[in-house]
Length: 127
Length: 112
Image (tube, one colour):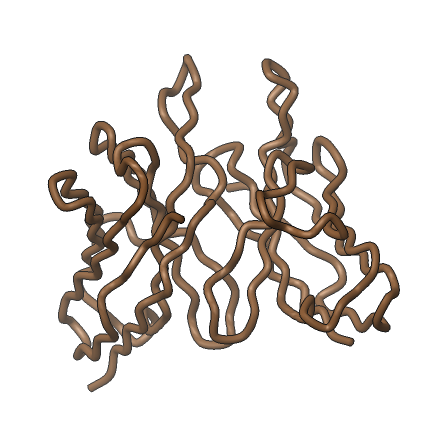
């Protein structure tokens, strides 16, 4: 059974950075991409971006582009999401989710559906 | 970006009755080269991460009860729960993965 275990809750001051980890087990890490999705309190789901763990190709949502970096360590089957210059609007539960990777001839690799999810990491930004 | 709009925002259905949730995309999510609709459905219960129910618009994920079904093509999709059970109370989201950014509907809250 696929497991994604995320790091614990974080409290950060405005302007700081946070790095959330997502450790995968019981599957071949490089066979699936890792997406990062966040959910503000009482709100819906917002896709932040994706990393193709096979070749480290990343795609970020425009809203966080320039502030986010997604990486993957294949030696430990762990993905990371770092978000910088935090504001109160970044307060949310952050989820990692693994899923199949598709391929378009014209545009290359892309994320498909989000098949397995981590338990979530609450990041609170407050002074 | 492709806008996903679900209807209704909330829904109350009696136990054993049918529940229907609609999802409309602002652009076509059917890829004609493989005739697949790049549309998934998720269920989220309070305090839990979302759970994949349906992908490719109508393929049920392993372990998902067969009372859940997905239909539709192009821009209009439907999630149907044929006979509502108490454990189906949740928020349901549709999602397109036809193009990045991946986008979700706003969610539909299903109650008894």
